Image (cartoon, rainbow, N blue to C red; front, side, top):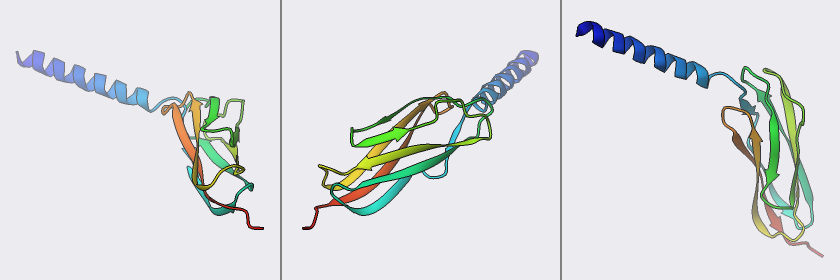
Length: 131
């Protein structure tokens, strides 16, 4: 009976180790920063920021899509795979025309990374135009 208990314990440890090892493989995104706050901007002003990212995983990172929460925010992203250890950029611009007050434009990044959906955001406070 003791042998069966030892055998089951060894099997459980091997299974746990295998599951943990699988979690650590593949692509992984690490951002230099995940949000930028522009503070007060004037209505109609356009602001943009380039989010730097690094593939900290062990497989090529493929960004399949980048989607903004509204048409006022436009992202551009690398279409080619990003090798492990290499960096790239996602450029996001925000047009404050027709906006007023506190804005938090969220951009979702869809990829083959261990965390398949990441978010970055542009934050601003849109003030009325002064004449």
